[in-house]
Image (cartoon, rainbow, N blue to C red; front, top):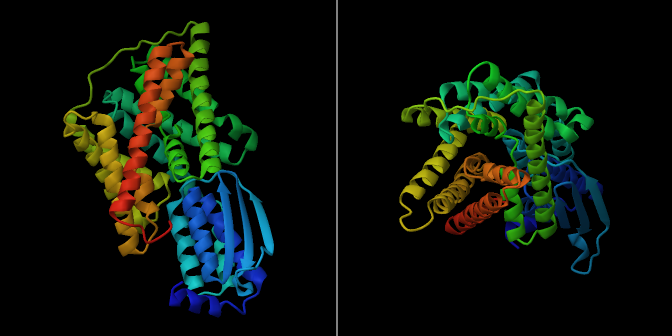
Length: 426
């Protein structure tokens, strides 16, 4: 134990046990709510508890946290005095509030802020989003859909505009589902059904579209690529229960999206609506770079990054994409896609740790938005679609590609941590 830890424990020795525990519980709740993975949450809360003179055994999963507290003043033979169980909804990444929670914890532990005041500030972070934030979130869905249509699918201008419009619809449905539990359960299937039905109707009666490209681009934010990646990272770090639970949630989301897509296709067929699936002239090559910049801005809004962090988020997204693209180009005899994803993960993992070390901010500001263009969620969606269409061979091949890309990305992030060791748990 360092001298700083000893001084910190002595500083809080006279603070009521319930006050220290209440502060740590609220900190754990906020970290979970803002999308922190199980290994990082457990490390952060256990480290903060030690600085407050407590021993904390933390168990985190996507829907619950269990923490047992013991006072370090009792010595090594001290048993847990309090065990708290919190049932929570799965968290969503909110970089601004995650950074605020991290800053409040640092200030409270350093003695610059009372624990009661810190608890009050942490509780205040749970206020609902403002109208402006909600409108920005909806806009980020449309902008992300348009960017993906241009950047990865190389669709036409018409496909891009239709994908953006459907993305805005999906953003609205998602926002409504956030405050309506019954709608939230089926929101993924409803979004997929709406996206597919609108695409087919527009293609049949207005202008021919590349159906699969438009549907995939408009649903890209809902496809659980981040959840799959986090699940594999948790499993690889021996957080087996959390990793498998998160993997199950991601697979159920993929199934609901696939069901909605197929249901809309069959419904349109039953009404005699036949899409004109026609590939219009593709976007010119120069649109890749404006689309990349637009995607970076959309992800900054989507992950609710603070304005001061926008330049870092944009740089992270650009670096991740270009590293993956150039890595695939120079892979030689190695498989292009897995090597590119590995290289992108490696650079982003190292970059996130450097940023956390010198900017004194959570590395998640770089890591989470940076890997969003690398995660293979769309591959999982295609795999499920092929399997439900009874194309078993293509579905299994695509599923194997999904597994390969997931392993490559997680390995890149792990080697990035080895290249530049993390100094912060977040």
